[in-house]
Length: 100
Image (cartoon, rainbow, N blue to C red; front, side, top):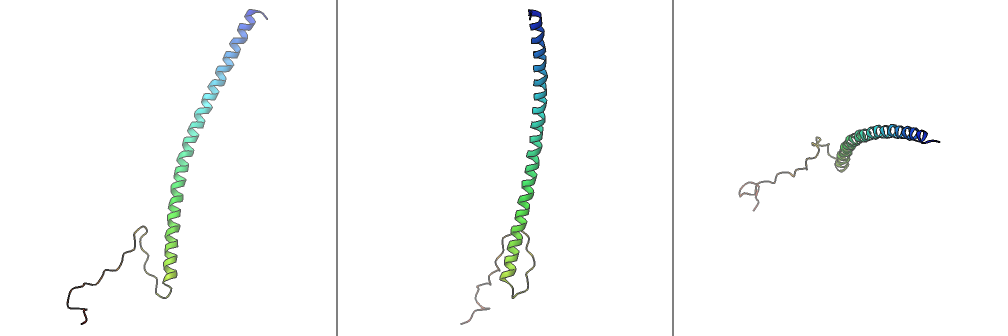
């Protein structure tokens, strides 16, 4: 091979290298975009699963209430995430209700 052939081969290899690098960059950009989409989708799925878990926990609480009060009629459903309130205590002033 003479020097001109070697130079031509070197130019061909450089062109191939640049094409491969450009293809790699384009593929890497697609991969990064797809990972971003997957991250968003995963975040949405996690949020939905957390809501379903809370719903199931609420149902378990209601079933436990029903099991504990089988002789009484079921109380109206309470809004979720509200702690149960204790009944108000009767007034402790003198007079009514006091026995001597």
